[in-house]
Length: 361
Image (cartoon, rainbow, N blue to C red):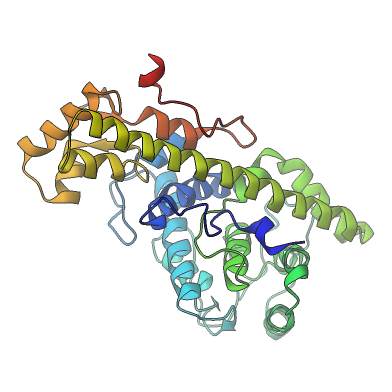
């Protein structure tokens, strides 16, 4: 398989974005939403996208389900940062992968949501099956530590670029079967897919979300894993996994192209009305945060309430934003961006479509 096939952030695709990181926020929130739903933690995607949250902020006032979704974001950002800093995927004491996903795992665990940190490498007790029929987790102890380290050593020994996705499929099955941590193994395993792609140079930015594809096929996901456990049916599992990567990359590429197009149309529309300054800053910020409030923008840009309200009024007047009642203030939604991010996997995304306001919607 060609490397470019798995690169939704390939040179040229994001050339019109001065800061590709702006797409990282909504992509990772889609992933956090879906990977949590696969584990039985449900929070509406619209609510996740609307959260005014930065990694490490206090979550005490949020629902338990939202805290758990945001905990995943803490773990993911920690892991991504370590990979981007050049750390290899590895295992160390206190359950660290790449000093990355497992360091993030500790971040998640520290919030009191049922995750327990242990001084040993992995869980010290037998793991609950949690209804997952494809595995009978290994008993805790030195043997578990050894086999997980061997799995990571195997991954690090694999160097052939054309076999990277095959390697990830085999790694994912083995990791989930070993079930090395007390909890969070599914989410960590799917996060590792992203980190592995980045570590192999298949992605430079974390703009790929694999969990929505698995979420839509949850029974088949578990059946394919079970087929390896019971029948040694590696072929079906590997094909299933590779199909996920291919279709998820195609989906990510369409969303990125559409968001680039929306951004360009925003600029053209604002130029036509001769709007500049905070109005343009806010419009560009919407690419990564399609739902905003006046207080959120005041914190983000350090501007006065009147300046923020003036910018919001301008964006509403041209149709970039729509205002909705939201308690003590107004919630503003960028409908074109929200439509791209909330579209289900496989939905038809018209990359070059005009803005809703341009179509009179």
